Length: 333
Ligand code: MTE
Image 1: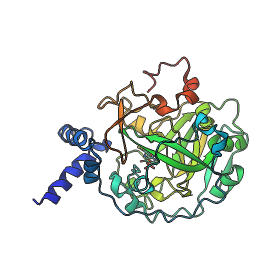
Image 2: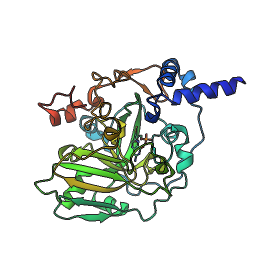
Image 3: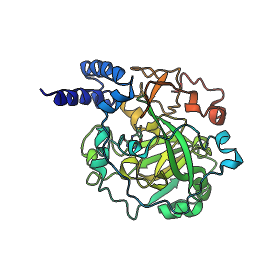
Image 4: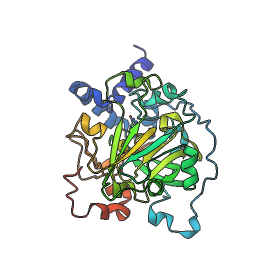
């Protein structure tokens, strides 16, 4: 075996840390854990295990994108911006979780490359006064797209800082007018195995579904994102429209959404269905509550050496803690 072949073999084991369909292969997990722990220690090692691939987002710029006015000084207080270094665009668009295409993070961009989203529509229905179907342009005409620079913390203990473009979900919910009985919001990804080849496998139940409480969905930080780095979302990041909830683990950020339904009870969610003891409905970032199989105390910021401490609610405690007053946060994971 050549050194490259042997490194590739190790690299593929490192990738096994994450795909949950391999969770029950305990030997692979233990080996992978050991390799990942070593790999996380230096940038050089990180790059060795995750070689840079030249992937470019050639999508159009987001028209009429509103930059946050830094002079106001309120954006950081609201959590709409951070002065932490942004993760390079090339990393954001080449290291993805999107099981509808592949479970291999480094191949999502290539497999999803030709995913067509022309004419995309998103329907909002259920317990609302005015159910409606919107195009992405209509979403942008309801509320001017704005830039939000958020931390993103994956449940797998890696993180990024991403300049999203999007519209607060609450502004769109105002248009459809939730009924007083509406308490939860369910989200659904496109179901189309011909366009999303991963849906031909049974790695998850399809379509991918997610949910929020209505007050979480209406929080000003919750974004329906349509772009990143000022351009329309590339397929691998959830084109043309996905959810971003910066204080929750990344799996809540459902991609390529076609339906949003308001309900009076908690909807099922894909990862909770898959492993209820491991992935809760709330999934708020909490460094004190470990995943059953790994610590959540620290994280690997993609592109950085060493590990950094994970922050309660991913650093958005001031903005969102009041949503959970009276709840035992160690129980509602
Ligand atoms: N949405 C769908 N439809 N399918 C997925 O597999 N993966 C989730 C989330 N949304 C996923 C999804 C997970 S586990 C994470 S961490 C984020 O998307 C990753 O987003 P990114 O690839 O844009 O960084």
